Length: 464
Image (cartoon, rainbow, N blue to C red; front, top):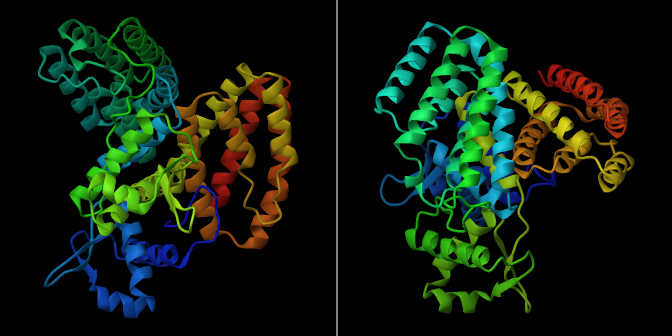
């Protein structure tokens, strides 16, 4: 999991060592607080240089798997992945790709309609009690967090991946507000009434009614945000950047550099300065600056290039950092193939609909090009059409969800399928992709959805 799920390229030595550390932690049942070993012990175990080992440690620290503790009795200590760390990485990615408010809400519509389809059939007595108590607390003003009901419904589905992405997009949507005071008592009362009706439909087991009420509620919410002057159409560049560098000044400098990139709308390839320039500008040592750079590199915000014309350059946003953090967070939650396959089916059938609705000449050409360029000899590009459809949907928030799910599938596939099996799958998948693309090109959304659903169901069976 330590290697990039985005590009599938071979890992460097440090990434391979990080991957071994991650696998060992998972195999041991993720013993939070336990010391895996001292630096000297681990250097001997992995037979690598101190520089390579420390780079591996930084990778597992960023992924919230373990952290190096200095001093007597210290060593590499297993840590607990946090929801905040995952959301931080996701929000930074959404900011970097310029996801707009309407895209986030469109993505929320898709995910929360999946919730309303699953929750009624998975609701038990305990869940009914939790829903009724929350509705009562909202009605009395005891609970004022508008996300609480959405998070609870997502948890009732029993799908950790769905619950995670609902939380991410709910939290992200609030960042578009310029002033949280706009959510006044009148707004909260209206939200509480909508939530009460939604819960009533879920408890009654009426999936269709629950879906309609969820859509109506979200449409009212986005309309309220659009009308107000207190709403941004894009995320503010003040979104937080945090990490596990172990040095607060390093995090602070990384945040300053990130905000400079954001405020200046600096494009990939822009040179931010040499190492010496940046040390002087921010008044820090080389060690602190390099910790800052590692955090920036982890989030694909900036990358340090060595040599006479080197320096720190703005990087291209990639979903890899988020995929890795999400993968490990969900691994800690014990997610199985069925859960993220279930979510992937719901998300990608929705992406097919959006692509059909927004199909134009340039999108048609891009879809055809994706089919023509599929190279399935080694089985590693069998998700290429899925990535293209996600991009052609025109929704960067939903594309983000799809890319992470595709990355998770790719990781599991690479680890569990023999090359000969992948080759056979690749040939068959290409033919299936041709059928999906043909239905999209013909504007037949119903047929395209059906073919996509069957294709992903078959993929899930293979992965199991």
